[in-house]
Structure formats: C-alpha cells, structure tokens
Length: 325
Image (cartoon, rainbow, N blue to C red; front, top):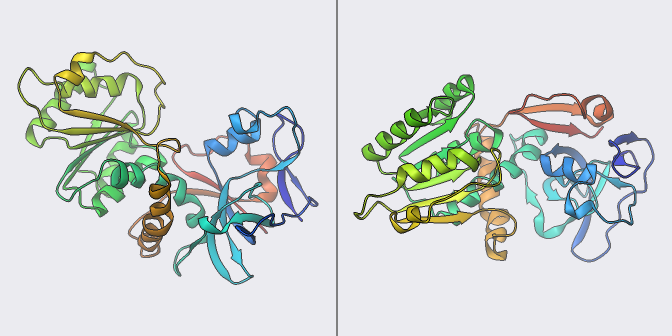
C-alpha cells in the first residue's frame, strides 16, 4: 500500500508507493481506508524519534500520524486512532475510538478538530466543570486549540470569554469567534496585570484555561491573589507550556486565594473522561462543525507532497492535514 513513513531513525518521513499493509491483531482492531490525517506536534515528535514512545533502540520503519479519518467497510466515514501509524492507504484503528462523521463535515476538518478538542473541551467541561453564566479566561488563545476553546466555551454556556495573546492582529479576529475581551501580552507587565485586575473586578474569573504557563501564567495568578479577605473561587487549568515549562510561584498565592490548580492532559484524564470524550463531546463538536457553528483553519496537501511540505513553515495557526489519494 502507499504510505508516508520514517525509514531511518531520526530521518524525515518519505512518501512510499509500497509499504507493508496494516492488519488487525486482536478483536478491538479494525482496518479502515484512510482519507485524511492531521499532523500535530505530537506526530512530529514521534516521527523525529524525540518522543518517549519512539525512543526504543529497536527501531523499525513506521507510518507517521496518530489519528485521522477513513472509511469503514468502504462506505461509513469514521474518525479513529491509528494503532501503528495512520498516514497510509489503510490503517488499523481501535474500535473503541471510532466516531461517526456527520454529513456536511469534510474529511479534512474532521481530521483536524479532535486534537484541538482534546485540549479544550476536556479542560473546560470535564476538568473545570464549566457552568452556564461563568467567566472563562483563555491564556494564549491565538493558536489552533485556543480558537477552538473560545467557541466551545461559548457553546457550553460561558457568559464571558476573555482571551490573551501576543499576536495583536490575530487577537482582534478572536472577537469574531466569540471572545468578549482581548488582552495583549505585548504590553508591560504592570499594564497587563492592571487590565486583568479590572476585568476580574468587573466580572470575577471562574476558570482559567492556560496554554502558555511561564511568565504570563505567573502574572495572572499573582493578579488574582487576595489581600487577606475571601476571594472568588477560580479554577486554573494548565493544558500547555508554550512560554516555558517552569515558573516560580509564591505559596502565598495558594494560601491567600481560593484557587484550584489542575492539569489537563493524557496523564490526568480518567478512563471515564476519555470515554465521555469519544461518546459525547467529540460527536457533539462534529455536529456543530457540520452546521458551520465550529470552525478550524487547515492547510491541506496530498500525502505525496510530504517531503516538500514537512520542513516548510506552515501558517502557525492552521492545522496541517494530508489527504490520501
């Protein structure tokens, strides 16, 4: 079968006319005819051998990609997780991960959305328990997942969504996606903190979804710190660390603030939360997208172009998707 694979450890993936076809190895696996596959940072890390799951000394050539869209039994469009790679004419996927794709939703968008949804709706709905009427602050909202988080926060009832980011041009476009207030991270620390304080005073922040960590997260936490009196309860959910993996955090922030710190990622999701994502949250988001009520930007190429595209700078706030022909 045709496939895109890494042949030599650490090398870039290449397009191949012939590669060993996928085959189910147990009763929880099924083979689908692949139509579209999105490429995320995770996929790049695995392909390069830098991800812990790909650091085995016993390297074997492997198909790239972790999830995508295909045809089950040649007719039913489904999304699923590839068990041994995805970007090929055929892929073995877990039956438990299959989600039907509604009419009106393209293969490319269906392939692009799930990863961004994992980084947004699980944090909002399952970790933070978002309630209607609450105020959500999204720190680092100008990226793919942040944009999806804005739309899903409003869908699940947030009364107000405040967003931060460094790209002022993109920040202004977030108003069209449902953001109510934008705050630039390019302004001085004092000005940023004062603006967050004004926003919180006007409408107390209930949930912070953080994609940056580092200095901006520290500024937000310090700004929300109380002064010896009871403060509004705030749930701070960290999803990413685009601004750095470490920061100094004063313990007085936790003692002087009714704040709860959470993480949202593979290691923090329970089996029940994972099941809810595939059975309820993802199908619901697919329906929204099919109706044009949830959007995501994509950059689409045929898989034959992988060698020309792989090291090319794709627009940073769009999801790279390869189609299988």
